[in-house]
Amino acid sequence: MTALHGFDDRWRRACAALAARDAVLGGFVARYAGERLEPHGDVFRALARAVVGQQISAPAAERIWARVLGRIGEAAPRTVEDVGEDALRDCGLTRRKAEYLVSLARRFAAAPMVAADWSRQSDDEAGATLRGFRGVGPWTAGMAMIFALGRLDVLPETDIGLQRAAAGLYGAPRSAEGLAALAEAWRPWRTVAAWHLWRDLDPAPVAY
Image: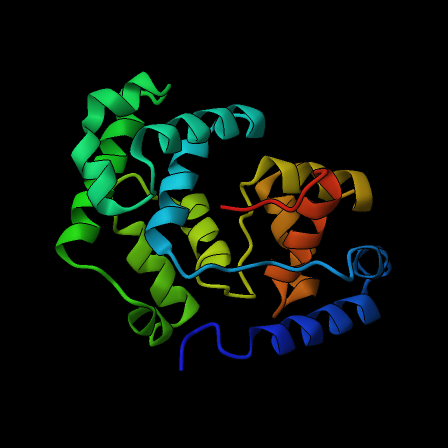
């Protein structure tokens, strides 16, 4: 059994629970009822995509990621390691981000972690494992936990888009602390709440 077994049912239960307790989220749940998070299980790909997106705007991240994929073809440890840091910098990555991507590629190529490895770890354990990789902080780890592993109670509290949405919709302080305090009411479904806030910010579902 993989970590994503039964994901559809858990997503539906989470949506129903959040809609019952939060009128704002209830509206979003109804509006986007035909859509949901689509976790893909590829932790390396999610980490690589998130590293590209660190501390830059979403449109800029999309452009650079498209260039990276155009160069490597497939977001896999082998392709990233083969192309090397210089080629990644030519795609628009900073020197540090290129180093992070190649370092991640080497770690995953040397010791691939399959879905079963992650499924045995709690959210706290998985987050700690991910943050142990060079260049992976809390936000980047959160993106992998959400979009690759499908963990449903993850809050990327430093995400600027989520902070902006929380401030505009709920009057929460526009800060990581303000978002975290607001999100206490969403446990144990903070990922689901965050996904709906992201979804309302963008014309297409966010993905990493």
